[in-house]
Length: 249
Image (cartoon, rainbow, N blue to C red):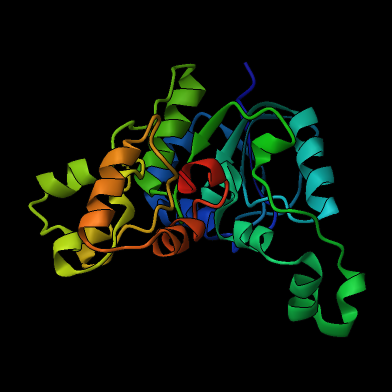
């Protein structure tokens, strides 16, 4: 029986999630023992005609991105959005809050017409996505778990509780009590043991919102510490630009 064939590809992004996969090093060996790599931009040359599972990082910001994700979807059984850019637009989504012409001028200057671009969006805005692994970059342990589940035909479920849960279990002092606005209240957990608050940094929401986030609790905390609506929107837009309807409530 032929082995499943994996693809790890990239659209518009820094390719940091692909690098995280390489950082798994010897932990990848059990997966490679039962699956072949058909394409991996950062790890190998070549390509094949069909993928059993394709892990695709990056968001859609150019016409070429649209063509490429449609091409991958057409030759893939299971498509997995890999990382914040692929799952909900990521940092690239910030361009949607600016004038498109200004963005082109800022990045490409008088050569901007050489590089057409479109409004940023995640993979699921263009094609059917079968699973998601959020984060910027992804948690390599979560990738390994997801890959094993998918290859075994088992469901892979993301944590559906906020970062505050593992943060409290780690006995961290709340960032809010340090005077630092933190989005862990509504952001999906799963980044532990690499939680930003554990390293003294605020949660910036790179894993997206939990299902049915407790926005009222978030409002209460933000109001308690004197944040204005504009302050809150600035915090959300770094990684949560896709959730306009939530951030504007």
